[in-house]
Length: 294
Image 1 (cartoon, rainbow, N blue to C red):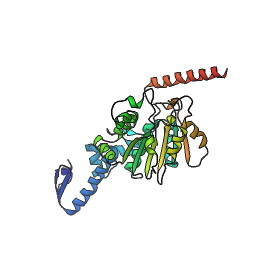
Image 2: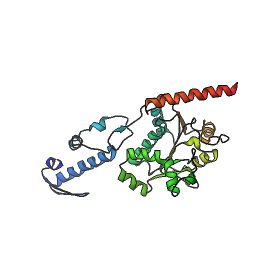
Image 3: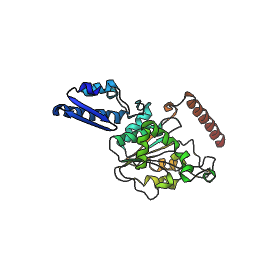
Image 4: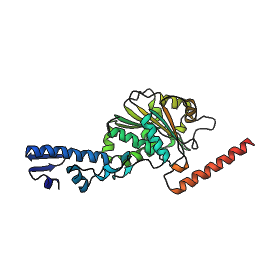
């Protein structure tokens, strides 16, 4: 199709190389238009004949006309905020270097945070993405799980892999991880590091201790943004241990440059039953708290 749009050129494509011969002015136009096509694919992870025609004719594609999109998933579907509080997270991220996103499961805290990080990487406002989680043993002992340390830890980090795989093609994601452009590691591996030119996300922060979250927050280097997500109703720490997230929210409440976005049941974007389950558990916890006060 492209050949028919540039009749004065001889275009030969082999593997990843395109050779072009012919009229110099036409070649210059061809170079500009193919760069536009490349950028479209990089941004939207998809392209069709209609898009190619629009780019060559200098028109906006349908994807360009959609507003408030953060990034596009691997099928070309736009990822953007789907609730008022999700939009607050996007706005807070734009204005602050450290954002706490707190709320129940299924509200899109982690997914949206990773989308913002992927956008920064694509736009080259950050050089790397660093994702972390505390490897809290929710009913299982790490030592009893099969395999080496990576095999033992990977199940805890799988939700982060899932989100990335939805936004970045598999081959490219593998390449980025091998080059450490995208890093996924347990919280314990952050000690001693200074994280610069990065978007850093700490997920499941309710399962950090006070010392762990302080250690994490003080890793921030120049040109770095951090997003800390958590759900204070899903703490897996021993009963006698305080959640580092709960304490950090209290201590840092009035610190300039830090924002907190509170999600609730209205923001849940999973199956409708998830909202009902969360509501039922919250009602149960409220009843138990009232009993303890009596």
